[in-house]
Length: 165
Image (cartoon, rainbow, N blue to C red; front, top):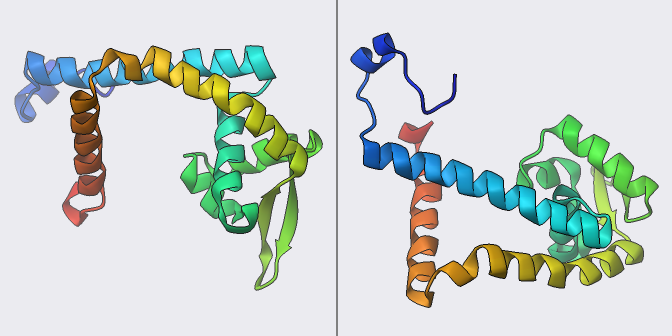
């Protein structure tokens, strides 16, 4: 059962979603899945770089000293810690990043992007940005994009409120 479907008993016990609400929710899920699949395929084809790997390299390149603690990196790209560890293993094997020990936490480590990782990210970034523009941004006016940004910020802020948890 998906998060959008209700059994008759659940429908009676909780307020249902009207067709407008359901359309907005399902639309978000479909667009998100479709965009991620297409952007991932473009990066894989052009650079042999999956979207999740691109996101990790981007986070590291933009971080102070081009490094992040593994737990913070996992949170920033929405992966479990074990999933992040496996991904970092692959990226390290490919020479795109390396792990370094955390000086104030013997159990912790940093992921640090290598020069090879920086170069691959620089090569892949135009492909990714063009894909975002073509598949998403060009379908909206500047005013609509500003509104979307405000909507996303509102929803994200609500997730940090105690009542939203």
